[in-house]
Length: 387
Image (tube, rainbow, N blue to C red; front, top):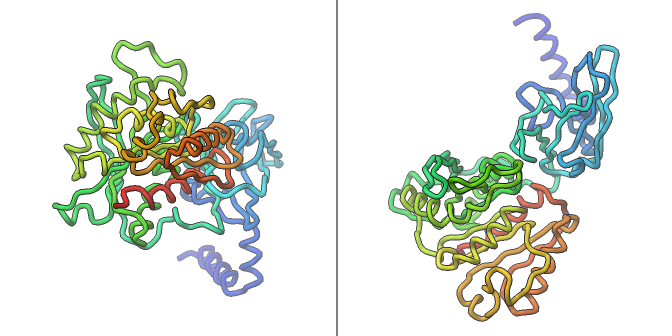
């Protein structure tokens, strides 16, 4: 071991053994868990201020842009300051806990932060920042039995193409070859992909923790890509279009594929559909139109119609509240209070409530972001598939 390494270890030991030095080290912040291996920045301080840094000696201007221009990081762009060696940096916040998309603008050109992992969001690979929440740990990876997240490919007759799905199987799935499980079909939002609920949402850890605590039934979760066009359809105009065939993919291709490939309980009582934003709207449309296949529906910050009519909307499925209540085990609707989609979600809730349609309504603080959707899944998973 070289002298320099010995010196560094000695300094580290001194810091850890001295409360004053340890407090100083912590006050300077810690690298985000979403950083690539070995990257010091972005760095998060205990007061939830975030420091970004990038070396670009030839750049004239570098900025940090939150996904969509504004999210839990605040409203950007945030201009970075240049040091003599061409290192650019800025500190923002305090920011909101949770997961936030962002990218850098280098002389006006959007680029991903080389120090951050990338996640598919906003119709592109984007940098992502995980900001710890000192009050919540239900989505953390804990020392509990863990399920598996499997990548499953299949051919959909609806599109004539191969499709990739992510499938969560609960702890112990492979140990008991006779046990069968209910299935939750869980959808992402616009501009995201089938990877979102595990990479950004941590759905697998949420379910691992709930199942271990016996707060949720062990279940299979299927996460598909919410975009699907039929053969011969015109190319989608941009990354947020081209989902007109998705409902047919789910009913004609996806459900049969899952029931063939996994030990499911293949009846409507043990099948649910839920999703966030665009996926929430898809869950409402697909679930309500196929009550022979789904007994439970979850709409998380859903992109639902503002002009909801109890008699005609969703093909009139709510026109007879008594019949709907008898057939549907769970209708769950939630939205963050600061979310731009709250007006539509609340209007849906109030209309259903006035008509006597039984449902669960969740309203709490939060934006249109993953921290809210993690909470939605946490709450929904505890009540779905309850006998």
